[in-house]
Structure formats: C-alpha cells, structure tokens
Length: 282
Image 1 (cartoon, helix red, strand yellow):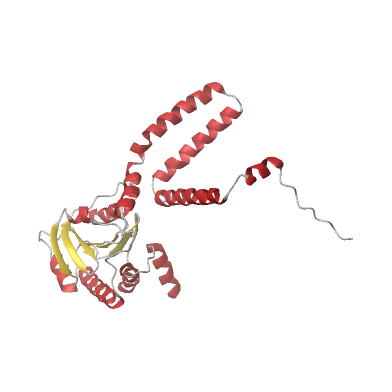
Image 2 (cartoon, helix red, strand yellow):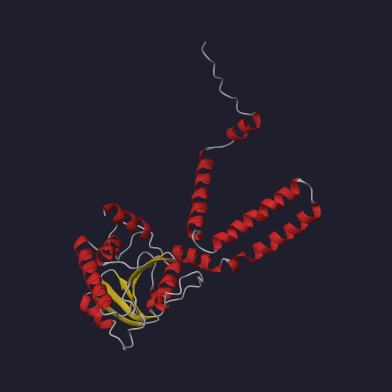
C-alpha cells in the first residue's frame, strides 16, 4: 500500500515574517553574517574567545532568569551586563587594535610587494641559504617578512637599510656582537628595509619555558599583524616560524622553503595550510 507523505504546513506567524523579507534583507543578513564570522576569526585562538564565551553564558542566564521572573537576580545580572559592556573596549583592547590595523593598513587594492616567479624563487633561495648557515653556526636571528599589513612602525625602531636580499647580506647583518645582531630584520618584497628592530613580546604565559626572548618576540608580533617571522635559536640553532600567534619549531630547509614560497607570490595561504599541504606531498 503506497504511503502518502504530506508536506508540513509552515506556521502562519513564520509565513508572515518570510513574506516581509526582501532581497535587500537577505543581503543585509549575509553582510552581518560575514562581519560576525570575521570577528570570530579574529578572536579565534586568542584569550578573548574565552571572554566571549563567558559573556554568552551570562546573557543566557539573564534570559532564563527573565523567563522565570526572578526579578532580583535579573536586575543584578542586567547591571552586571551593562558594566561589562562599558569595560569591553578596555578588555578587548589588543583585539580591537589588531582589527583596526587590518582596516587601516590592509592593502585592499593589491599588495605592491608581491614578486614575479623568478624574483620570488630568488628571494626564497637566498633566505633559506642564509637561515641554513645561521642555523649551522648557531647564530641567533629574527627575520620579519611583511605581508599585507604595513610594518613601518616596527621598522622605525631600527636602522633603515633598504638593501637587496642576498644570503651574504643577511649573514653580515646578524654577525654576533654587532649593533644589529640582537634586533629583528624587516623584509618587504625582495628588500631588507630595516634591521635591529624591536618587537613586542607576547603575553601568553602558557608557552614552553624552552622559548627564549627571540621566540616570544616573534610570537608577540605575529599576534598583532599578519607578518611571517623566521627565528633561528642562538642556543640550539633550531629554525622556527611564527604566524598568527602560533609557532612551528624544528624546521628543516625543505620545510622552510615550502612555507616561504607562497608568501612572496599572489597565492596566499596560512601557515597551517602550507604545513598540511607539505605533509600530504610527503
């Protein structure tokens, strides 16, 4: 015996709401969804995400108390929520600053530092050759590679150079016991624009005690911008790369090359994507 399936009727209130939704409303909702997603993406893997979860829990409890007419608790929670929203600009100051820097310094019309294939291969070759030598001699180094966000404020803390990237040039910059050795070198495209630059230290207290000042400075800068930072440990010669508040350690030359190549081309990838693609190829 055939079974008749009946399509459930949409309740009248919902049909009334849907009838008022026009094309512009759909566009409006999509824009809001994209903005919320970008905010979540910016807060992801930061300490601020735990604060957001706490705020959502607090708002949920407030709604429950209102539903059960718990007037005293509801009044206290409403006052607490008001105070919290006043304090949000202070609590989320690092994240707000990072978001405004993305808007103010992001090159929406294209990045002028992107190189053609031949130039990109040449820069990556010189960088990996320099890092390999620095690692073998256990010479500490910090190489900051600028991407879409400008680093003029960082380069202004060091010595302005503006020289073409070569391995020998970079090795001379990081000669031990020289004024430029302890600072960071900032790279824009195929040029070294400054050396001896100061980087902000991360405030993340959950990092391993094995990480020294160079690694913490690299992570600190990567938390504030989209730069890629290469670190060579002075104690062990270990090569690391920091991006978006994360650090990858114990990299060999081929892995470093696989990470650096997309940075100088128009095909942008995150550090995690580059690492996963390289692992798949292996």
